[in-house]
Each structure stands twice: as structure tokens, then as C-alpha cells.
Length: 454
Image (cartoon, rainbow, N blue to C red; front, side, top):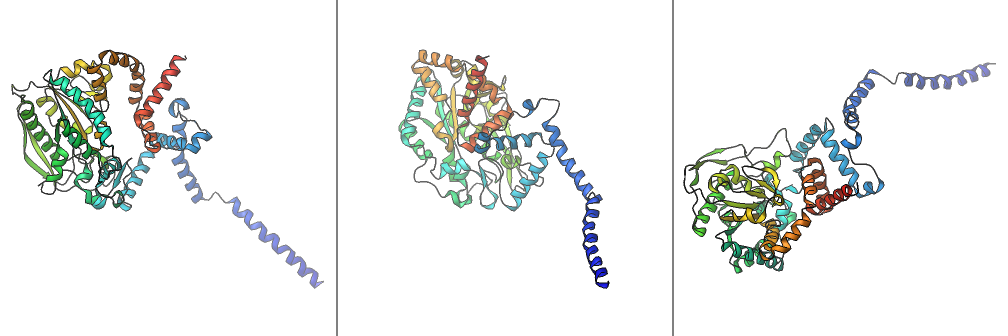
């Protein structure tokens, strides 16, 4: 009898222990778990709201899933881009990640930019031009500059001078601060080939790059900031002053007085001296030390302000606009940004070059200025040279070509004015190593074909 009772007691023990987990599961929604659930809803609700608002889903997020886009990486890239712009917490998380990467890992989360030694930020394209990876070759230079020589000679007969300006790249001034993985100066570089061929053709070249390299170590003030892509504000002033003096002497044309003085030295980067790191939107940005900011002096009443200058350049010329050079020295001349958007008194980038008469726009000036850093010398003018060459050597062929390309240009302009679409194509260009203009043309053709089929 005793043994039976014992066995019964032993049989009841596992039943009691098995009931305990049930009690725990019934109380799984503890206050702590409810708090975590509330926080999760708080984070995810804005995401779901951004994906399903009053606007149609296709209008807000035109990127649809497909296995081909998944394996190609397109869907992930497009979804990331969409969430960055539309998720309410996207900017905060991006800023936090950028701050951690910058402070702890010396990483700059800007496409095609890396951090070198002593916190110097460099452009990968500029460094690859410096070490010769992007060497274009003399044959390519002879073809392009030979056409420019024909254009320059044609314009000289109309009393119009063509002047090339080589702006300094950061890698050329601070090679010792570059990441070791990018090596040293190449035996053959695009800049060297350009200088050789342009010298043989006797083209007018203002080599600010070589000049900046020579005076960099002895300069009293920084010619570049650690955190900027472009030359410093002080460097821009030196460049503008040197270029104006050159134009006066070489072209024998009148230009009004422009100068600078009363230099203020501060430990804060302003203007474009912080342009790359500024894109990170850091909560605690790094300090700049010893940056120089001169006071600009202009003679706005000068009667010599009668020499309009057309400038075809990248973003390095933009400093000449806020320094007063474009308006007060170059007689309100046009600034053709990448031979695309036009900046002047009437157009702040709203008009594109293809929308104006090329011949009239060129010949209303006394000087045509082509400015580029060494990394873009193989594509100097960004199409200006090729179009101008065709215009002045075969006007009939140019007119026919212009008529054909103008059918596509409105669609290309629409793409460039669509910030979201342009950003997606830019990211695709970087990841797939395809020129951005090629992707814009492909997309524009698809848009034109779709409209024609309607």
C-alpha cells in the first residue's frame, strides 16, 4: 500500500511542474514587454504611414519588387533611397551613423570620398587621376585639343580669345595625406599629357594647379581646408586675382579693378570650405583651424567693365560668382555649369544650353573661359568643344544634329529637374560604374518612347 501511494505522489509531481509554464505564458504581456511593443509601434508606424498615405503607393514609391532587380541590387538601393527621404526617423538615424563612422572609423559617407591621414577628405576620382589610374593618353588629348585649336582660331578672327584654366585638385597639394592604398604620383597622368599637347598647339593655358602646388607649403594661409572638395575661400581669391591679371595682359582687353585685403583668420569653416563634411549633417562637426577670409574690394563704377566672359566650367568656377568676378569683372557673363545649366542675371540654372542659340551665345562675348581640374581635363568643356567644332566647320551638319538631339533634350531636362529620379540615377551610376549622362539618355529615350506610344 505504501508503495502505491508513493508512486501516485511521484506521478503527480510532473503534472504540477508542467502547469507552471502555462502560468508564465498567460502573463507574457508584462509591463516591460508592453513598453517595448509601444516603442516598436512608435518606430514602425511612421514607416507604414509613409508607405501608405493619401497619395498612391506608385506615386510615392515607384520601385516595384522583382527577382531580377533584387539580385542586381537595384531594389535594395532604391528602397534605401526611398526610406532615407520618406521615413520620419530616417535623417536622425543617418546622422547618428555618419557621426559614429566619422569619429570612430574615420569614414566619410559621401559617394566617391574617403578620409586620408590627419582627417583630410579626398575625392577618389581626383586621387585616381593623380596616381595615373585614369590616364587618358596623348592620342585622346590630341583629338580633343586639335578641335579646340580650330575653334580658338575661328573665334580669334572675331576678336574672341579662348583661355583654358587648370584648377588644382586636392590630391596634388597634399599627396602625403592621401590614403596609402592610392599610391603616389603616376609616371603618366592626364594632366601631364594635357600640358604637353596644349603647349604644342600653343593654346592659352592658365595653370593654376602647378602654381598652387609650388606655393602650397609656403602659403601663409591654407589653400584647401581638410574638409572641403574645392580650393579654400582664400585660394579662390588668389585664383581670381591671378586670372584677372592674366586676362588683362594676354588679351589686351579692359577689366575693372578687383582685389582683396583685411584678411580675417578664424577657426570655423564658412562658404565652401566645409562642403563635403557638411553633407554628413554631423551633430558635432570637427573644427577648422587657421582659415583665412579676405575682404573683397571692387570698383563698381569702373568704365572698363565692358568685357563679357563666357565661362564653361565645373563647380570650381562657382566661387567666382559670389566673389563678384562674374558680374562686376566679367560683365555679367554666362556661367555654363558642365555645359548644361546656365547661370546669369536671367537664369539661375532654369535654362539649359541646348535651349539657346550656341553661335550667338558664344559670339556676344570677348573671352571664352574653359575651366577644369586635372581629373576632368580629358573631357574639358563637357561637350562644348565638340559642338563648337561642328558648328564652325560644318554648320549644315550641326543644324541637322541639333534638330535630332533637341527631340530628346526636353526629357533629359525633366530628369535633371526631378531630384528623386536624378538621385537614383546618380547612385546607379556610381554602383554600376556607368556615366550618369549615359543613364540619363537611356531613361530619356524610354520616356520619349512611352509618350510616342500613347
